[in-house]
Image (cartoon, rainbow, N blue to C red):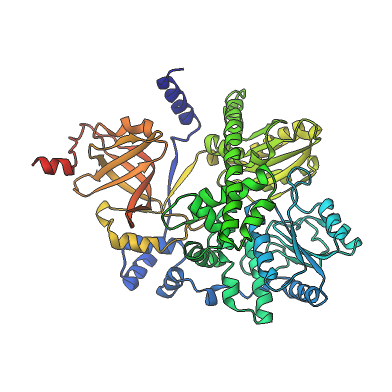
Length: 608
């Protein structure tokens, strides 16, 4: 197929699945509150509008938002249900010299949790080890094999992180063997809470902790914070763990509000100034020479940490994260880099196959979900493939695999904005062996013989529960922005809204009646470089529209258009400039084409 035909095919398919037809939704806000805040703060009114959208309506709240305080803005960890019991049990274990096993999941949140708790206690307690279950032999969560290994090796206490809230039978089995459990989890509990010595989970119905959205590593942090406060351990020791916490917050996509915002704010400071050797080696490997943000963690650090558990053994990641020597950390980072390279090749191959399968599904346009099962796909990348399918086809998605001779099928689920995939899976629970997760991401296991029935029922549940309007991707516009308002002061204040993430997303702006300056072009791998000015003004903006190169033809004739964009930092020679990241644009009707006035370049000035 010729290149033009390929581009035409993909463009048509994108149009069909509404990727090009995004719905623009404007955030409503109390304009009177915006006016009052503008009067008090004396900053750009658009920025005041963004603050009010985030529930900030007075100068004191704004001060707290822009300058989070570690000492003032974190909750007392002992508010959390069972925290006192957990601290007491660990204290008794240390006094009696019992062996403590730190047990965690194999993803980023799990491995950072294990590294955090292990690093903290390992500084002053010797009888300590960690355990990560094998993704392929043991599956997700607490396993009988892990419990038996703990018993055989003389462990009296297991601290479970990022798992365990549904392990009712496993915890009971451990209790029979004389092994106590402290569970630190952030997933939704089932109807029965495990009979562990202590269960730390803000989502349990009887927990009064005011913030429910901590990562598992965040809960591990609250545990060591509580323990340190009872033993006079300096706050500096606790703060040194925040680089791990921010990595977990970013990778697990938890809301960056309230306590998570404070932890992420100070975690990024730590990560950018003095990260632990393991994280430093991953950062140096990426050759990035700019300040790391939440999105940098997601795209640079998290995939390499995840690669250990996806391709081999997640203990490689823990060994890296607890390393204290630079050269050792560098060697271990190289191991993760190799595994991540292998992971990318496998995930690319499987994603291509998955795309072809979906495009050949009969009457796909009538289906409300995607559920694929292929026995020979690699278990370690099905979550990534599910995310790619979601991004391309915008349907609640489940990808499953098992291995040719394995009767138990593993599945990874991802969902679109506004649809709770955890609840949809829960309605199919009679067909499943196990499931767990969140509103937008979940995991499951199902017997091979039940897969067809599960796929059929899942589609029916989604069809019944899903509002069809949700299948059109939305762009939520925070505010209109005049190009003339874009200056250094505006950008400097906007940067203080970071760290950006769920529930504190990077603001999306709308600028109207833009016209191409004559210098827009396609760059790189089908990216659209846009150079435009607002109709009637001389000031211009420049930015990039990723994977939008085939839309250049829409703006080259001088027809005015409206555009949605975020503003990001663009490091250049030690300075940070503004760069527009265009998300979408829509052409405006016009009776007569506008004359395109080309922007003068340095070369033009020299010719003069």
